[in-house]
Amino acid sequence: MGVALGSLITGEPIELEQLKGKRIAIDAFNTLFQFLTIIRDRMTGQPLMNSKGQVSSHMSGLFYRTTKFLEAGLQPVYVFDGEPPAFKAGVVEERKTRRDEAHVRWQFALAEGDQREIMKTAKMSAKLTGAMIEQSKQLLTFMGVPWVQAPSEGEAQCAVMCANKLVWASASQDWDSLLFGSPRMLRNLSVSGKKKIPRTGAYIEVKPELLELKTVQSKLGINHEQMIAIGMLVGTDFNPGIRGIGPKKALALVKEKKTLEKIIEAVKDKWTGPPPDEVFKFFMEPPALKDVKITSTPLQSDSIRHLMIDEFEFSSERVEKVIKTLSELRPSARGLGSFT
Image (cartoon, rainbow, N blue to C red; front, side, top):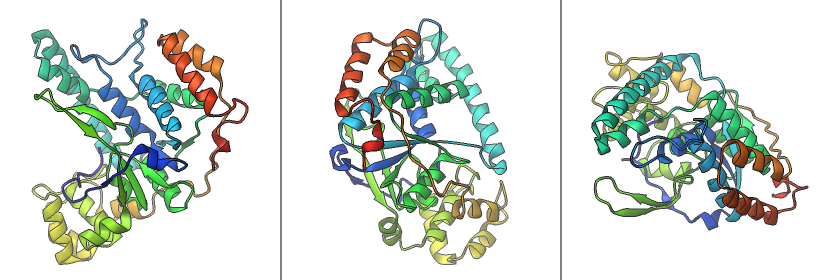
C-alpha cells in the first residue's frame, strides 16, 4: 500500500513515448496487484479465469501492458519482492485479515446484488499467490523481458538500481520509492489510459507521472532523512503511523523539530509498531543487490502459445498478434539484452 503522500507531492505528466530507450525498474508485486484489482468482471467482481478456475487477470495485464511498453521503446525490468523484514509481520497479518473480511463482504454483496459493494469488496479481496508470481516470471522469460529477484522489498531494490544508474527510473504506485531514495520515480505507468470515475459514468485520461527526488525535497524544503520521518509519521508499509497526523501535519512537525530524535520524542506517547530506529534504518539502508546483472532470454514463441493459449485459454488470435509484434521488435535469437 505504501505511504500516503499524495497531498504533498505531485508529479509531472510524461508521455510513454518520452521514455523510449530508457530502462525502467518496475515494482512487480505492485503492478500485478493492480492487474488483479482492475481486470475483473464488472457484474460479479470475479477476476478473469480460465475454465479450470485459474485466475488469469495478472497474466492478461502483464502480457498486453508489457507489449505496449516494448512498442513504445521502453525497456522494462520487473523486480520481484523477496523476504519482508521481520518487523513487517504485523502489517502482513493485518492485510490478510482485511482481505479475508473483504471476501466475506463480497459474497454477501453478490448475494444481495449490491453492485457498488460488489466491485469495492472484490477489489479489496485481491490476492497475489506464489503460483501467480511464478507464472508471471515464466511469462516474462518467454517474452524475453528481464526480471530481478530482490532479497527483500522490490521497491527498495528498484530504488537502489536507479541510484546506481542501472536503470533510468523506478516505477510504482507507492511513494515508498522516494523514501528508499530512488532519484526518479514513475507513477501510473501500468494504469495509464482511460479510467472510469466511480458513480459518474465519466472517464478521465490517466498519464504516467515523473517525480524527481531532489525536486520534491526542494519544493517541500526538507532533506531525505526528514522525508523518511514524514512517511513514518503518516504510516508506511512497516509502521502504522501516528493517529491524527496526516501529510500536512507531518510536514509541519518535521520542519519544526528537524531531527528524527526530536520528531520521535514529540510523538513517543502515540507511537505504535516497530522501534522507529529500525524503520528509519530500513529505509536508509535497505537490503538490496548492489551489482545486478540484467539479463534476458530470447523470445520463445511456442512457449508463449502453450502458456497463454493452451493453459490460460487466451484468444489465439490476440496472442498471435502479440507474438508477431514481439518478433518484429527484435529477432528471437537476441532477446532484450540488445537494448542499451
